[in-house]
Image (cartoon, rainbow, N blue to C red; front, side, top):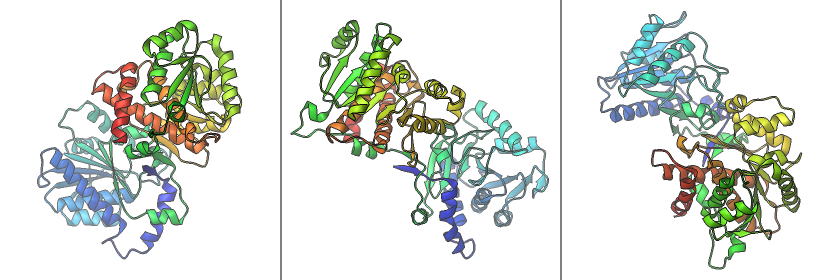
Length: 515
């Protein structure tokens, strides 16, 4: 499992280690810079180049990330690289001295910056011509976006890189891409999109959360021995991400004594004459995810279509351990959805609430998992007096998912390229990045609702008479999102995919995870 900690917690864990240091050698900056230089060597090899003769440029500010970049440049200069720092103000004294002693260059593009004064355009040209470009402008203590002249320089560079071909420099962010919201993943201004981020100690929330996570590239975590300090101060992760082994550990696997009721029976209230496919896809997701049985409730014409696609389904009411309510419902079924949802919550059965049924949500819905997209979440919040639009939700997804949890008591799974899950207010959020952009297709959310419903039914069947708490529901939601995303990748093969193919890929993905 990947666990991210806030900037304040990281700084608190670093303090005793920094206090015990006796000079640069062996200290945190030495270890970070050494690891960073090693990553640069890896990226140069991937480009078919050695260190000697390669061009490495670092954009550096006054903080420790700039110091890490300067010391890494010094190490690379010692191996024959053409190492250049672009200083946008005062920089770390020790790093500057190390780079100068190693024969590196320093260019100044702002008043008070050390080095040879150059115009901003000249600095941009120098950076764009590099083999590897390091972003060490801001550290985890920064607040808000980049300021001038850094904002202008990064804006120009990012535009050039976005249009460049294979010969463009490989961008490596030092700890975090400069200008992102370190704790919330916000992107308040220009950010240099990284191909790879080398983060120190532990991941930071902004590296896992959208929209900033899309700018971080591949993530490399350099262990600096912070875990003991984090535990000593009672720090808990702010954001978590399940990995393959975590999903496999959570997923219910039948044993030789199990029957369909012990594997979990899922009730599905979905579909309408206008949207019959939603019911078919939801059931496909549930069956692919391993539910023991699906009971379907819906209009007769839709039920007939479900049975044609899935003859194993039982049409009609009966014993269930969890519900999915909402995919493809029209307004004419809202009354039925409201009654079923209220009954499920009253009886302590977990329920997935999607699409049309979000309008039938009671004031409080503990025990439910809501699965809106950003537009639906904005509507839900506005209906409860919170002024936010879709763009606002997309800019700060975890914040608004948590707001919806506070207002409703339900766990909130916010669908997106990175799926965000918010549960108990004092618990970590979840951010799953397992999918492909091709998953943004009609019906994909219906499949996800079915996968999650099957998992909740299986978990509830293993603990009869017990209610699943918010933490369990949130973890299950993250696991279902992971399986759904992995199924999309498997079905896509790098190209377009349909929701039906995603559902068909779920059993194979689970088999691979469980193996």
